[in-house]
Amino acid sequence: MNKKNNLGLDISFINEDDPFVVFKQWMSEAEKNEINDPNAAALATVNESSQPDARMVLLKEYNNKGFVFFTNLNSKKGTDLKQTPKASMCFHWKSLLRQVRISGSISLISEKEADNYFNSRPYLSKIGAWSSNQSKPMETIDEFRKKIEEYKNKYSDQNDIPRPKHWSGFLLSPTRIEFWKDVEGRLHQRLEYSKVSNSWKKQILYP
Image 1: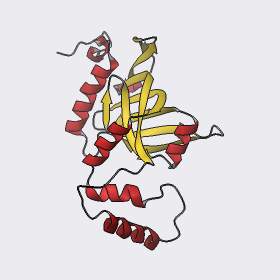
Image 2 (image 1 turned 90 degrees about the vertical axis):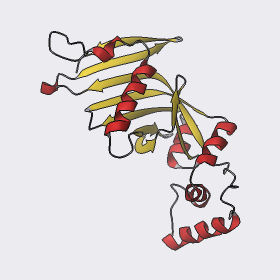
Image 3 (image 1 turned 135 degrees about the vertical axis):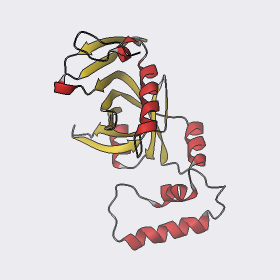
Image 4 (image 1 turned 120 degrees about the vertical axis):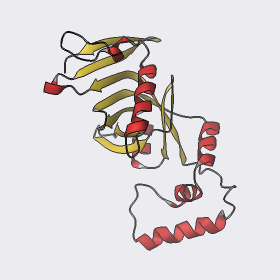
């Protein structure tokens, strides 16, 4: 049963000390209710001029170390993250009227982890990783199509496609995680977890 405070707000999710437990619960609900890509998140980075940039990425793994997504390391986000290894991530689940904001430091995952995930991808996604010079100007669409066909011919065995060295995954290790719930009258609930040494401190924020 959900616990209510004197404003009639659901405060049950505030009782958990581990933010990853709350995230797992919320993601599970999102997977049941969101029509498309419940694991989609807006990822914000900054470049060498401190100019912010944001784009949608897909969360592929998460555990108590952080949140993992994959990309071309030579892409705009890849370049930003190599230059400034910090980022923020925001999930918005409209069907649940909830969002989660995460910020922290960035590091590359291991070669083995990257290989394991790459090998699990569909054939055309693997070919795309080889064919796309992500974020760079394209002269014509035919240029891209030609490269796709070239790599299809080169890697005709769909079960034996190596991972490009320029393609890997990043781990966002959080120092802050905020859970937000929509409440009528804009009396929204906000629960913030902040990393202090090796433990989490939590506090309720005004909406």
